[in-house]
Amino acid sequence: MLTSSGGDTSFVLPDIVHTVAEQNELKHPRIVFVDTQYYPDATYDHIHRLASQYPFTVTTISSATSRDAVEEAYGALWRTSCDEAVSTLIRSPFEEALETYDVDVWMKGTSKHDQT
Image (cartoon, rainbow, N blue to C red; front, side, top):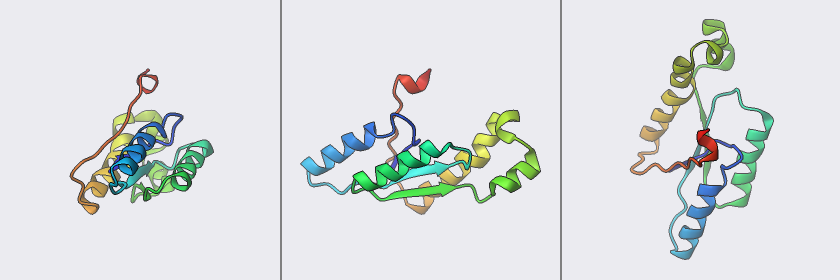
């Protein structure tokens, strides 16, 4: 399984994996995008392009708690409690995806640009 942030560099790892899979006649892994429901439109555009340009299965997952329910319960959670926001909006749905798809290997790419 690969994960994608939908950001500027989100095509790098899928492109590398696609090339290796094609050259070695391997199955393309699933790509999982964790939708926090707070991304700008450009992020969703990147994910749609990724799904249309490569033969990956791209799966979007999100928190079982809707954006409205999160904001009602916590306010602007991502502004006030980053750790709780990450747990509610990213970690919990991601851990559920790991179990749902019976993942043995997870790959993600982080570039130097993403670490600043």
